[in-house]
Structure formats: C-alpha cells, structure tokens
Amino acid sequence: MTISEILTRKQSREKFVWIHKMRPLARREALTGLAFISPWIIGFLIFTLLPTIATLVFTFTNLQLANIGSTHFVGLQNYATMLRDTQVGESLFIVLKFGLIALPVGIILPLMIALLMNSNHLKGQAIYRTLFYMPYILPFVAAIFVWGGVMNPETGWVNDALKYFGVKNPPLWAESPIWVYPTYVILGIWGIGNGMLIYLASLQNVPTELYDAAKVDGAGWFATVFNITLPMISPVIFYILVLSVVDLFQYFLVPLVMNNGTGRPGGATMFYNLYLYKTFFVFQNMAYGATLAWVLFAIILVITILLFKTARFWVYYAGDTNGR
Image (cartoon, rainbow, N blue to C red; front, side):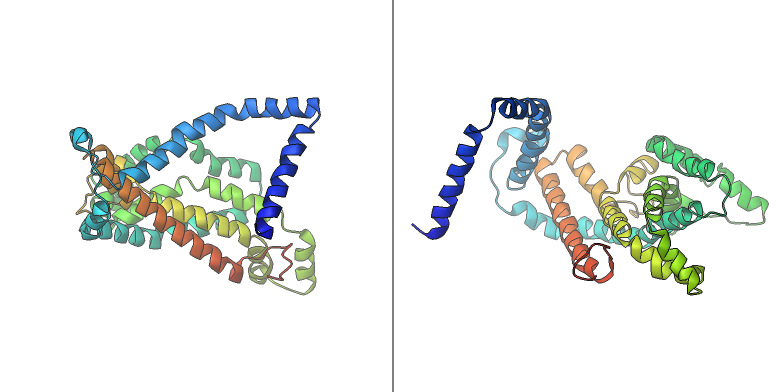
C-alpha cells in the first residue's frame, strides 16, 4: 500500500468519525438543511443532469422522433455528418459576422451610458437610470414585435422619417442582407439597461481617493478614465465580455420571431443556435440536434478558456498578490 492510499484512508476514517461525533443539534441542523435543498437537488438531477447525459448518449445514436423504434448505436456518424454539413460552417460564419458588430456595441455603449449616469454634473440621475433600465424588464418577444413594426420598410415610422428628411431609398432593414445585422444590433440596444446597471455599480465602487490624486496631478477626464476607471472596472468588463460571447453563440430569439426562423433574407439570419433549434424541434432529428448542441458547448468552452487565459494581461484585480 502506498503512502497516498494510507493518507486517503486515514482522511476517510477521520471524516466518518467526525460525522458521528456531531452533536445532536448540529446533526439535526444538517439534516434540516438537506431537507430544504432536496427539491433543488432532485430538480437538478431530473431536469438538468439526466437530460444532459441523455443528449450526450443521443449523439452516438440515430434517434429521430418520427422513427424512434429503429434507434440504434451509430458511433461517430453524427459528428462525421456534421463535418460534411455546409450549413454548420455557414451558421458559425454568420455568428462571427454578427458578433463583429454586436459585441463592441454591447460592451462599449452600456459603459458610455454608465459613465454618463455616474457623472455628478447630470441632474435627475435616478430618473434617467430608471428610464434606461425599464426596457430590460419588458418581455423581449413583445419588444421584437414592436421594433419589427417600427422598422418595417413600408409602414415603419423610421423609414417614414427618413423619407421626410429627403432619403429617397431608405434601408430595407431586416429584409436586406446588408442591413439585417445592424437592425438586430439596434433592436438589442433596447435591452442594454442591465449592462449599464452592472457597469454603474462597478463605477461607484472605484475608490474616490484615486480620482482626487489624479486631479492633484492635473490629469484630464480622458486620462482619468483610461488610467483609473477602466483598469479598476476591468473585472466587470471581462465579466460582461464572457457573458456577451456566450449569448452571441446562443443568439436565436430575434431571427426566430422577426424572420420566422426561415433564415431570410438569403439565409443571412440562419444563426447556429437557430439551426440547432430547427434540427431538434422542426426536423425532430434528436441525435443530430444533440450533436450540434454538444459541439456548440465545446466551442463556447474553448473560447471562454481562451478569454480567461488572456485576462491576466489586461484585467486588474486590486487584491491580486501577483501584481497584475
């Protein structure tokens, strides 16, 4: 028996003895706590863990709801099919093109609004903060329908306003392959109140003595923002960035509602997650849909790990002992 095995057995015996040495009150409190969290544990096991394991098993079968009786093991055939599926690459490229526009806007614009909301020169801060955050609490599907009417190429008041100011051929917005991504980005601005609120909370936690020292040194507004504000809130920026990347790859509600999930115009809105959704619930190909879902998970995991690897070069933590 090795030394590690002896230590492991010794620790196990110590834990077992410690449990039996618990006082009746402590044991009762532990059992009560387990009883209270048991609904969550049972729900997690039944509705999250087991379905997740099931979808992984589905990737190695040919499960289809229309022909469920002939389900059998096919190995890596679904993954091989995915490598030959041109729609997968096109959908990922669509996500990339949209992300080049949506990510900068979704990260920078809430930060700029938060800087404005945090200014001491702004009167009525509470009113403006409420107005900017209020759209976020509204049902997003309802907002999509509203914006779909507002930006309708024929009857929307946006194009009517552009025509009034002399624009002869206003954009077709969601009906144009060129303008569809800016349209989605404009629609997404409707819900930036949450990001603005997170940034605002981080800005209010920046030590004021740093700003006082910068003022004594004669630093201007831009120098203060880039040398104090941004480094101090960089963990929050990193947090917003990671969530935005995850949301980007899971983006499908807007094209599903606004363009009925058809991918129009010209397939420009067939996002990866929309293709996954249609594979599952329209084509009812559960095996191939599960394969798409697990590949999406792998892609998001790899990108998230890369972001965490780069964070040590630009994210500043005040209590970091490594001096970053």
